[in-house]
Amino acid sequence: MNTAGHGLLAGKKGVIFGALNDKSIAWAIAEAVYREGGRFALSNAPMAQRLGTLQELAQKTDSPLLWADATSDKDLQAAFEDAKAALGPLDFIVHAIGMGVNVRKRRSYEQLRYNWYIKTLDISAVSLHRIVHHALECGALADGASIVALSYIGAQRSFSKYQEMGDAKALLESIVRTWGARLGARKIRINAISQSPTRTTAGQGIAGFDAMYEYGNRLSPLGNADAASCADYTVTLLSDLARMVTMQTLYHDGGFSSMGITDEIVEALNAS
Ligand SMILES: NC(=O)c1ccc[n+]([C@@H]2O[C@H](COP(=O)([O-])OP(=O)(O)OC[C@H]3O[C@@H](n4cnc5c(N)ncnc54)[C@H](O)[C@@H]3O)[C@@H](O)[C@H]2O)c1
Image 1 (cartoon, rainbow, N blue to C red):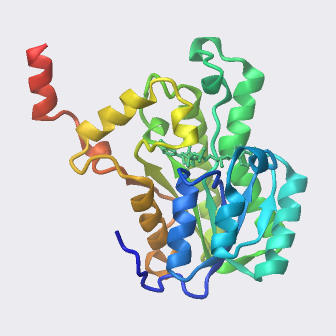
Image 2: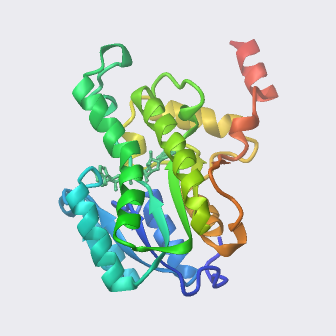
């Protein structure tokens, strides 16, 4: 693992949404951005003050904390006003927010509770639209800024246990493309990283997560990508090196998305 850093984000400022504890992908991203010279505010929902350990990360990286529910226009407006006041124009935003309410409550896709479903879409996908909207409205985004959101291949393919979250990620990736077309005039980029199953609080809220994790690990030529490698990949997208990349879903999954079957799986099936 790279511990020294290369100054890839020296001088860049941003906001990172979604670090809850040291298992969070956003936590690893914050550490990698910090290592590369980037500085940021950390944001999470007010309830994360009780459930997580974000204060610890804020102390370690000397970052302001912005408590904002990503489904609240009022909270996001205030968060971007505060971010702008603390950091000046923002060069990057990381959206690492997700929650499947029916999935959490073990409600099947066939029997979705629609108010929970709408909440899932609001938290996991519409929040990206809101975040970009409020960042622009309050004049917080610098020209040439880079926005990254975290997704999963359940947006394109059906994974039985991922259920409503597949719909949420499909919407998230569509919002990436639809905003991207509009942000290009200011050279602002927006992309989704489609990440391997990762052992985090959100990941492990999914029934059957261990099987999805194991399946990904066996099928991917490189194995599952972990949070630290996802963080390094995120750094490249936030850096100027990726300045012409926008509106993409980029697979960070050890090769999983290009695989069909392996000899090992054929042999295991033959033997059973
Ligand atoms: N863990 C995986 O297997 C995996 C795989 C691919 C993509 N992802 C995505 O990565 C992102 C980060 O998730 P993670 O796996 O690090 O889990 P995590 O539980 O650490 O992070 C999810 C975050 O969403 C925040 N959140 C929930 N509701 C919110 C709200 N209303 N307002 C603001 N924040 C809210 C939570 O507080 C938490 O910090 C999510 O988009 C997730 O879908 C995860």
